[in-house]
Length: 278
Image 1 (tube, one colour):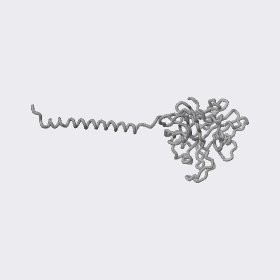
Image 2 (cartoon, rainbow, N blue to C red):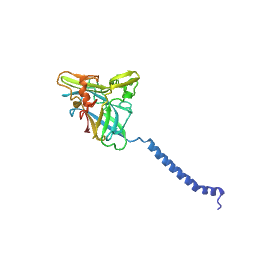
Image 3 (cartoon, rainbow, N blue to C red):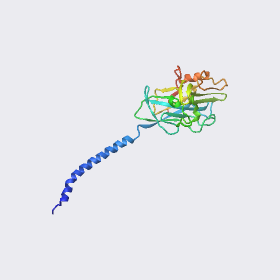
């Protein structure tokens, strides 16, 4: 039986086609692998809880010997690990966190928290890679280049107007307060003694952005305790005269709060922000 010329030509081409197919298959496999590596999210999601305490005991808006009246604050420049730490990326959720600022809200708008809201955000959400090791560092406040934004046009969480003073001073970095049956104290912390015009702030003589450092913090197993008992340790809560601190220059009531947070030349009171096992 004779083999046609076309059949012989096809038979000669089969090995060549097999070689081409093999190279194409490997090229596709490599391309897919690289594509998955490029498109997969970097690192992993990590949640860090925050809890309110009064000298080590739970405190809430609903009362007890001491009732929470407010506890909301901005967090920025988050770092994990030893020493100065490695910057950790915030998860932008379009409400509580942007790429640079997070809002922690530990009040629920009930009972003594008359100026609050029912929505809470007790968690800081990060994207991390590898094992950062022990240590947590962050700032209480809004970065200077964002601090004087217009809350009506700013991206969340800086559109939360209750945390804003006005264009000159910018945002309230922290709102915190407590009350007893016959006394109380609250603080609004933020930059003061600012100068400039709208859209051209020259700076603030009192930036008031505390840096919090918890050296032994395990980001995968610990929570951050915010102890208002230690924050207000220098406030007289037995004089039956509710007082406040609005971060203004020369406010005597602010001095013990600034000292507790380590502002100015103060070293800070240990344990205002500290770690606790979850």
